[in-house]
Image (cartoon, rainbow, N blue to C red; front, side, top):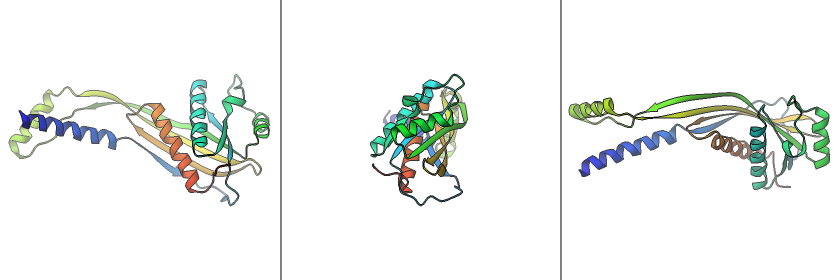
Length: 205
């Protein structure tokens, strides 16, 4: 009985490790034409390009909250720029908001691609010896397993300096796993802001 419990616990532990290892966010910096050597920015207008108003609001609010958490002033476009019916903001409208709130940078994120897959998982692992192998395959044949959804998101984020209108940082994030889309977005935002901080592109105001 104890051996059976230990065996089941071992299978469960292996499954947990598998799930953890199959989730994460990878951020890749894109080459920028002119390397920025100016002062780090400290007040950012956050813009998310999306056809879904709820997603736009949620993403921008999370990004602003994270920037403020690290001491950088920020405001979301959804809070200061009404979204027009065609979802396209004019340059002058953005500049008006930037001037009004004295932002020194604009950060823009958009979704490049999204893939959602149904994953079927069985929790049985292999055992040593011919009989152990037989038992593991026998159990596998009768293991109903479970189904889950795996989501992969590719987002591109660009940071622009307001006075020069120059792109000073760009990156593409790839996030995958069985986490919710909301959790994935949290990971992406943290990865981007951590990278900006490491590159000395942002600082508390």
